[in-house]
Image (cartoon, rainbow, N blue to C red; front, side, top):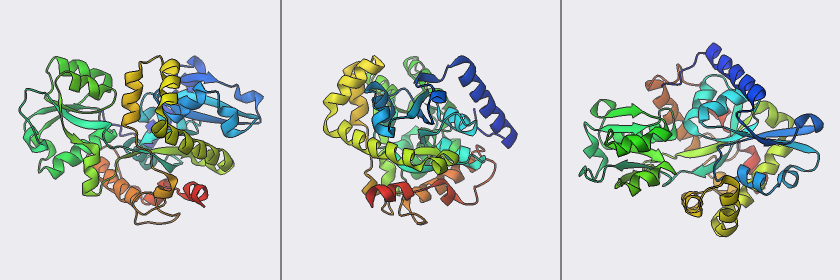
Length: 347
């Protein structure tokens, strides 16, 4: 399903998201009552191995944000939920793929990316059935590829096909939720899938062969990443809380890579998953240090225009426009990227 919302539909969805969150608590994890605090922050998490859940598991909110600051963790399932919750004012910060982030921005969401949450290298891959005989992306001509639309893998798949000389008319892209792909794969209803961890290992365990990794697009000067998106109103009112989270995030991310034992022990208990699943996630997690993010390859210095992140977002916006997922190109993509917090971290 295309996420091509009119402005009215966009804010209506946001209102419904806020109502559902408030009435049923379906999206809320454990929370500290915000009313009892003078200040509060609402952090999104995809219920995965991430810094937000690490902070929850270790009860580090007071250390991260300071005493007297309430913290609320909002569990989301898709980038579209992040956008809707932010539009409704019920979410302040969350990691999100660049594709739904661009859809939100194009629809008028007042939020900006302040940090490259992670570089996507091999956590998202194009995998083919093991007995298909396909060894290259070009070999997918005429084949069925299952993947979730309006996501980073959708963008990466179209880019990979283009670089291999194939157009959208040369393959059959099938829009499938991530939780549907493994069963469709087992029934051999699809010839290939572009998908992420933890679904990806299920396909390779069932004979799938990886023929393309998202990181391969770096050779074509395309960066596929998750960014930390922050509501502009929250960023302006509480810049110290944004900076505090970024500083702790960088420390936690460094620990994930340098000392995974603590992360494995913490996250297996907190998320009730096995150690192998946590290690798969950690092994495909590539944080980008703030000092690197200030380079023109990534976000660049505040106000810098010719950067890798902005070039990728421009390409992605064109893809979303061509595929009908946004109705018009944003006039100024620079308004989506704010590297001032990264500059403060480095300076």
